[in-house]
Length: 115
Length: 110
Image (cartoon, rainbow over all chains, first blue to last red; front, side, top):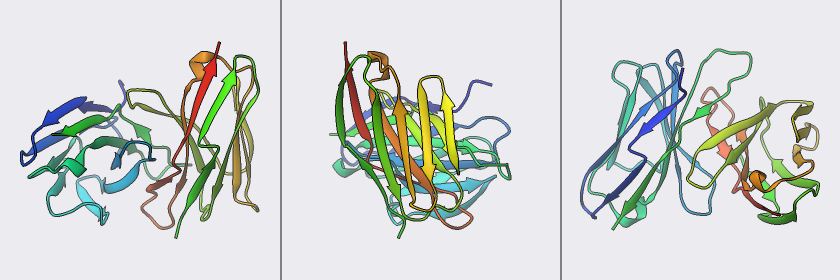
């Protein structure tokens, strides 16, 4: 088990382009979370999946954002028509529920810069 | 509304000093998390605690449920402890999404 992985680690794109990030959770984990962290701030919740079902989306997730977890394993987060305000670190975390205490395990993040 | 506040925002210490970072939260349903984030972004979970005290090496976390307050202590600090330390409180409801504080940037100088 190598933990939660994210790809790519860094992405530079021009405004208006589409980008897609991937998250591979710990293999037996059924929950997967996406968070976004802007410079100098703590992460903020975007959305989460229980298996393949997307159960909650934050109001931060505009209609330009879409997330999928088609087979209940890896997840993708796509941003269409990127804006400079989308520049941030996108973090993925996974967990196993039910558990005695849910612990979320974080990936290394994907740092996005929109020029 | 679930809010998490940390203090101080920035902390500079000399190697060997005892360090304390404080966290106040408003909901406190299940367990409070302490996380460490090094430059480059990766987040590591340090502690999850719902009562009392936990210790791991030179790190100690305490929590007071009645006052909704937690502290992270680092004994005999070392430059490799330099990082951002973040507390996070699981939100109410089934989501268990984490509500994060803004973090404390710690710099330990040799």
